[in-house]
Length: 115
Ligand code: 5GP
Ligand code: ZN
Image 1: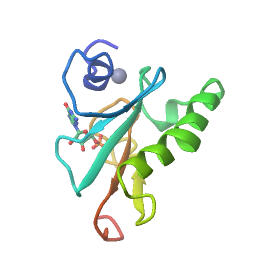
Image 2: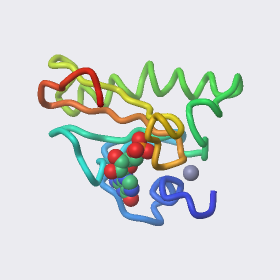
Image 3: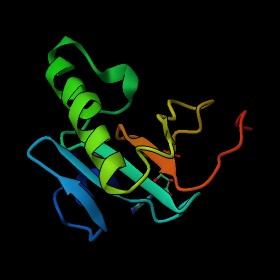
């Protein structure tokens, strides 16, 4: 989608620090990391938020959850220590980039609850 920063990152029009990529999904380091490990996992196709997924995205979401996330967590060394997966959604969820993304955050003991 034109003017979407994460579409541009997925298309390599904007450089980013990729940690994973396949035909459907890209993952790259957040530019403002909140922990030693902080990556963003996105579908390459433009999806505005979690609420815009539909039945046609079952294969994509299963791929992200069952294959991509465990693989990235293992490769970044947080599968055993643990991590947090966050999908900020909409205004109250403080979603600032309107292209679906999952924050994978770890590498230190995280506080809870969020503010
Ligand atoms: P949100 O607040 O929408 O859940 O998260 C958006 C995230 O994207 C923020 O953590 C922010 O630091 C990150 N971000 C924004 N612009 C860029 C960018 O151009 N490149 C990368 N790698 N991360 C970005
Ligand atoms: Zn997009």
